Length: 86
Image 1 (cartoon, rainbow, N blue to C red):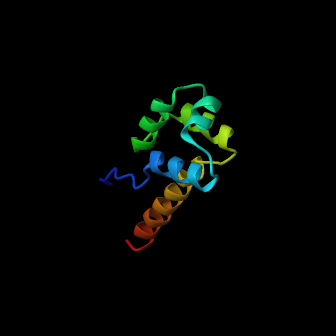
Image 2 (cartoon, rainbow, N blue to C red; image 1 turned 120 degrees about the horizontal axis):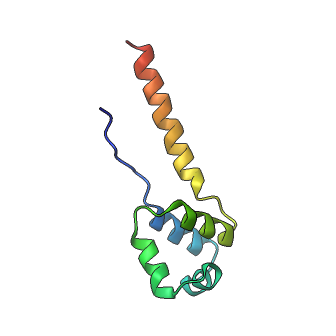
């Protein structure tokens, strides 16, 4: 059975993109309708609900789902490679 290891830490990725965009946690909090403290909690979370990722993606004009798509595609390539070697 395949291990369910997720190498994505979405909170860190959001924090890094926010820094790259030269935006503050306060700015993101206003954009998604929460407190600055909640944004800092988001930064510490390795995973988030899809709806929250969508709200953040829309606010920041950045597709954070791309990281999950890339990981999915890599896993599918690996899985297909295993099946063709059998």
